[in-house]
Length: 196
Image (cartoon, rainbow, N blue to C red; front, side, top):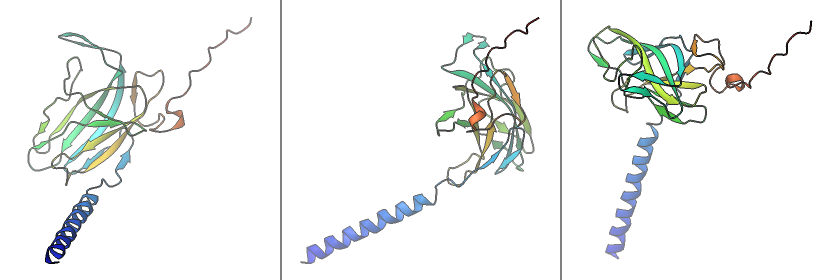
């Protein structure tokens, strides 16, 4: 009888422990991120990001020859400011589509003009500009920007990266937004010549 009681107490202790672990992991669920338009500065922790423009490329010319993507290359012209009073690393970023698919930034920038770089160590109050590189299907995306650091204290926000058919370079925020029905419009009908 004593063994059954001890076993029951052990099971109860294990159930309580598992419940506490489950509850503590619930507190780490990501809060609703701020979403801003391209061209708008957004601060996350000590870093401030601004996506200035985006450009689609079918290939990139590097010193090792032509680079061909799996889908299409998306280059995003960015600036990042370190507002801290000490050196701070800006992490690699990622794109998210309307379905929640995540696309990490490509860490090798051969052929990217003004590439922002892989190791982004910014001195205090330094601003750095350059381009990020992604290999993604054409469409509208959100760029997840991060304060970096440990996941428990990380802050993030989203920047809309719109898609406009027929435009190789997009800037500002006047094009269709992420998830909009008009973000991937149908091709226009061919124009008919005027009769004389």
